[in-house]
Length: 455
Ligand code: GLA
Image (cartoon, rainbow, N blue to C red; front, side, top):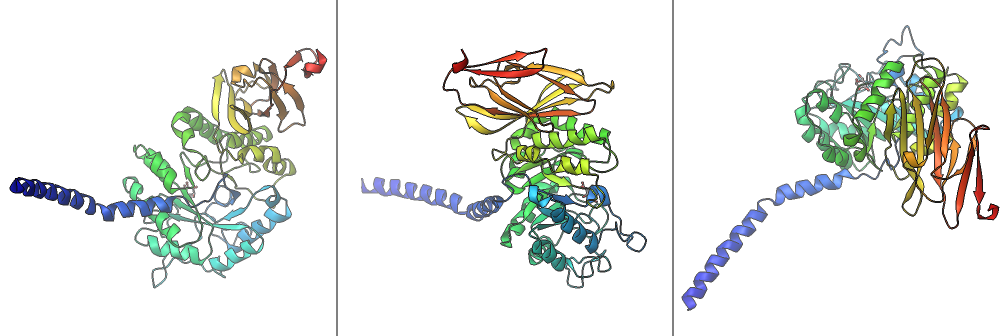
């Protein structure tokens, strides 16, 4: 009997030992995993970041000798910092001044550190960052997870930890990490690793990744659950160019791939359809309104790339439209979707606050992709767009000063949408404590509202 017990114990003991060993040998890996997991939530970008980014408008102009006003230089970023404040952009939420490519010296310093081109950034990046901070704004910088940046300056490969500390020592608040000259198959490891080093510096820095777009280009299906955990925002698609066709291709990409893309957005992690090009050369007034409206529906980062010295007032007004910015910055952080597309007319809708019981409020954009030169009428009931709250919705136009009042879900709403233009409405859900109904007079094209007291 004792033997048997011993035998049992021994067998049990070996089993326990084996089990313990199996667990113990994973501990280093498990702890790395949890360290990485801990590194993933940096508490930043609870709403999509807003600011100014040099690339689309100023590109890689390094010719300060012949073009001192427009080259990538300390002076350009200080000027834009000043204008962000004096022209009222900061007051409506634009906060980051972001350097893009072409700020670097072609070689690292003798001890392996990144260094700015000292002719164009004579005071160094820390001084520029101090200037931006002294105005109450935040400072962003650009690098690349590869041997070179897209424009051929030194990338971070081989120096991830050093570069993260360099950025922290310059009081950087936002890092865009591009993906040229790298292997997209290494990004699943490399992007989280750099994020880990950024977080280890202890300085809160928004982390903007180009990880999915480069993987998509090389036929790799991005692992969005990992991307969400590592990055505050990420590029999914092509660079925006200064044209309506470029803008259309981006809008189509987000509409056509919305089932994969939309669920990934939320507070702290955003899809980035690229910069706002409003106020440049390529978009008409209507098209500019379209970009701003659709970006708000997409819960997109609002990073203007425009010359703030020369922008015309009507474009500035689009960028400073508080009502649309409020939609973009809605605290729920739910990205909107294209809910209708037929014969050149699209309807996009985004659930927003306030919520009443199970009913969201919505931002709704009617987009006219037709080119037949005259505005198109769109008529649709709120219920057909999924707005079913029994108390109805207060409807307001976000560009035009029109308040439609409170409409029931059965009410047909009618809008006129200009070619390549948009009408964007917000529909605030109303509490329903009593009987509410709405009548619509199609001839006068107005809506009236009746409550219990009117019956
Ligand atoms: C890539 C990025 C752009 C810009 C350039 C800079 O193309 O997608 O946004 O940063 O590189 O070279």
